[in-house]
Image (cartoon, rainbow, N blue to C red; front, top):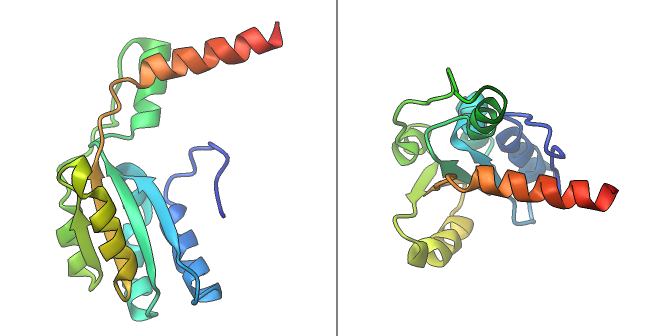
Length: 150
């Protein structure tokens, strides 16, 4: 398992999936990122297709660099330059020769993930997500952490 320890290392998940697919070709490789992080290195799909890598990459789609947005709101009560344009992740994946899937509702999640994992070559799964509860989650986590320290 590779993870960036919450360091906001945008763009690492897809290259890590490619590397792991090459090092461990018999293993099931699943990676995930937000749409902003995905866009940092998304053109590496060309490499993954050309190299015949097998993995599934999940893209949480909300149209923002959301963690940065939440930090700006918390610190400045506003946000700037974190909104992304509309991206059709499925068509983007297909334009590179990968297979794209989009989850339309929660009931589809299991079957779409099964299809994506069974796909030969890179597969990308777009999942719309709503982070509106993040400020409450951040506040709750901070309170719990603070209480443990005192």
